[in-house]
Length: 453
Image (tube, rainbow, N blue to C red; front, side):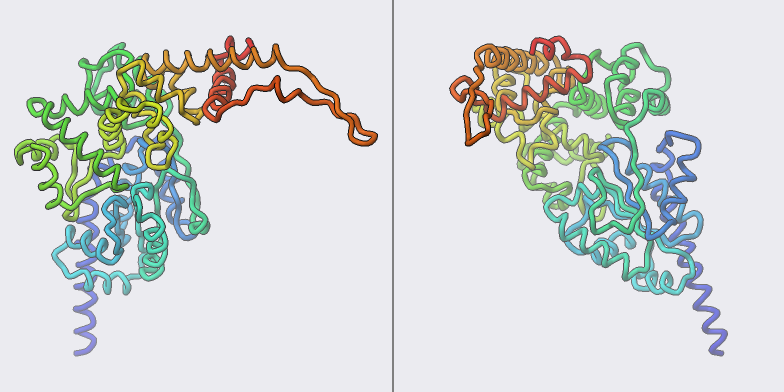
């Protein structure tokens, strides 16, 4: 009798695990199939990487395909019979146990505790996939500590994706770096979603730096505008997807993104979302259009943007308006942790030349200035950046012309230096402009300016 009971329980657990695995495949397979590997061997290499050691940490810039890769892994591992749990970091609300219960509840009608028992008795490796650690927001430190404890309790191999380098607490995980897509891969991505590429589309593809931007190029198709910045590209995509709801929907997305950004959050409770959008003047029909267009997503009772890049672009457009009242002060804030990640998009959203120059005049990031000068943020930012770089170069030349050597003696030692009164007192923003000139010279685009020195 005991053996019969044990046999029945084993069969029930086997069926439960099989049912859960099928649900994971159904949930993530479609998005996972959208991932186009850079090489023929990349899929096999990824499967080997996640099964080695304690798992792996997948790092790469925004829009390079990490989330699609993670969903492909979830579907592939589940299809192979491995108990697999996938959690998007943006849906973390402070409790890993609660997050896991919500995710399991979305995929199976069985009690989570029953599934956990079946997993514990299974002899198959268990996988816990955490997607997008950069989207933990203000809860990052607490969340990263908790995920290690959760993986230990589950006896799971850990797969994590994030934009930053692998944190020290995950030193035991293997590292997988995802590079920005090549031009050929960007063409494949664009054609996969949009078919034939126009001459304008091919030109824009050469300029964009991520897989998601390549996909947007393909989806916008013949409506694509030449020399589109990332911000303009995303705005075109949003308006095309929303069609008749474009004006109200785009406004609502900007306000929502700005609110999330100021809270250092990546999702909002659905009830709070309804109240927020109602207060901003959007009706439920317009909100539903945002979900139907695939710009927003519902998951576990929370609302989030479908991709961080769309969130950042919408937030940048809204935040750029605040620069108009005090460009200098706003420029000083661009290097703060809360604004630095989307500083380029904010600069691209400024359409007033005087405001743009004022903002860039206080920037202390040579990378941001260099990218602006190279045209990454549009012609207004490029013109303003080059004006500032040329002024810095002329000031440097003037300093060199007027500099005088001074001899001083300390004991038997004779020292050679510069007279202090002939040296210019460079501000931090001015120093960043000189560094930007050097960066541009290395790339060739600013060599003529550099040679004036």
